[in-house]
Length: 583
Image 1 (cartoon, rainbow, N blue to C red):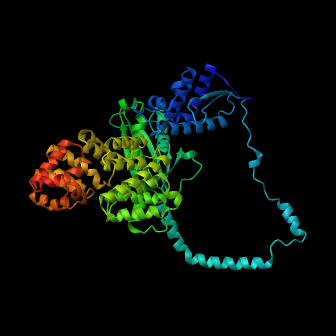
Image 2: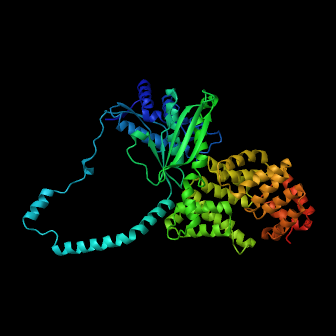
Image 3: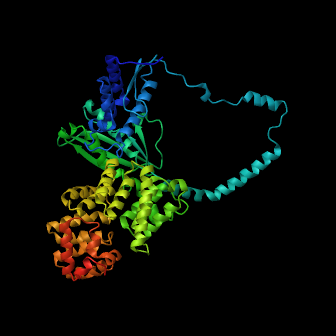
């Protein structure tokens, strides 16, 4: 018979046994979480056991943490409940006092039990065919299968064998294609501690668990935890990837630790990515060291341009996906569209999403992607103000539904932020970008878009390190990432660099891109480039309908930058009236 208890000494003793358990010790975050809520409960401070206080005090989130947009506490609570259940069904089965975390709240219960594990119900034990009875029935002369049926089966088997002899190669090709166009499988193994310091083993193990927890929140990856390789009973998928790592003393500074991480493609048994990270002695003493390491790794592995998706991207560049549409493939196509913003990429992505089954079309990710494709209207023939207002209205409704369906999706909030930005709702855009980054700090598209928006608002100094971080993680850098570096080079008077970056950026931004090229070209004294860009500026439909600066003011609030644009365009020969009115 179970009953509640408040015996502090007994609870603390049970807590010590739990946190000493090897599976719990592998996750410093969960250990801190459990210790925090247990001690708060014992101190009678249950009112402070809230998602906010746990996020700030345990997981190091900032004081402006929003529990509605950052799911860290809910995710870790689910993991903690699973570990507690595993412990009390295994090594802690005979514990007289159990620490329980009820579903739906973070205040633990302390229960005194009889220490008896409930047996598995016999109703789940499979029944077996009574072979003796079947054999006896056959001996009594009952014919169970006629000779005619056996003949038909034999003929069918022969026909099937012949069919397979010709169909086999095609089937193998199809299986290969299916493996490529499905979301990748990733197994994260526990990192090996090669130092002579056993005190860091728990934090080393915790990194793998933290990576799995963060990666499982993504919608384009299948992730599981492999634990220690020699204890792993299930084989890794042959068409997947495995992440392994070691930790050792830094050869030049022994007080520092060096993490060496390797991503292996199991299909080829080849290393497709590796990284070496060093933590200084000071950083090792910081409580957020695991978070810092996780984010550094996830900047690459947690993004759709990373090495886990190379095979899918190569396949998409060479093959049609008609009939093989999936949420994963559509997401990859959307990433390619974000890189190029071409008509072809937009149409291919839109076709993919519209070909999905209804239930997939109604997911938050699909709705958010379609909302961006709708409002951005790449390749649309009707560019009137009325048509654009209709597109904004449609996209707004889709994003509102997407947020309801996927309130913690960084991708969804990124698309919502872009919509707010496009219609001049800058405060709401900043809030949405902030939520996107809280949900997934390694969403580098959201990071780069946020940096660009900050630069357009006149916060270039704050935007530059964000843009540099986004660009440093990829070998494939989208053209639109270059807005902030171009503006920084322009501000610093490095006009050659500004012109080079602005030219790249102009391929992705039909409005501000050519204007930025003119600013850089005038600074460099390149009249030929100015003359080349002027027709591109004057032919932009949105500029023609309301005026060049009038339209840009919806996106750019930096008054100094707007003044510089006015001066440059007038010096280039644009009539002053065309800056503020239709022409």
